[in-house]
Length: 265
Image (cartoon, rainbow, N blue to C red):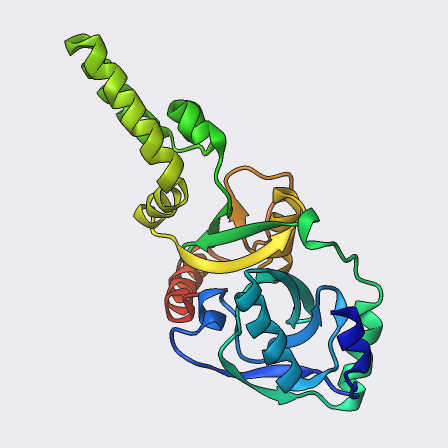
């Protein structure tokens, strides 16, 4: 691939997402119009739209993945991709390209093996759940421990009551229930976590890559200064100060309406 890139002529512009088709791969990974395609596998990408589409199509053919770096609202976001995006592009001008290139040269870049993929869900009050897009072995070995680690306390309580009832009736029935639950939790753990968050009023918001959960939460906080997490090492989110209590209530109502119409970060 390196030799092919050297033979590919470069330009003085980057490509930027213009329109995203419905049900496209770009929509499934929550890309947005005006996202600038900055780099592919940490290589500053000035090879043009045609070459970019070809390289992403090759990923699917060879069953490989790559790190795509985009620029959104002056923030670099790494996303793991494995298919062509399925959207239209426009180009940046030379001045914008040079500014982005200078900023990108100061960015910390990581190989795909160093990154974890995360999925963020949020509600209208900007409360976030952030999940690593991988299967945890603890979900299959010991479901209650996995539920406790995921902080799904009400689900853990329901499971505990169910297992206690099964154990009271028959030990072998309890054992069968435990095995079936372990297999189900391991294979469907991400869908279960997503369902739990949906029951709490959260919707899918972002899909991106980061080195750790702390870095993932930090990225979300940079995008949304008012973001809140149940457990985090970050400082308290930005809070607007209002002069009166009535103003607070009115502003809160208007914020909820805006958030529903926005739907995504």
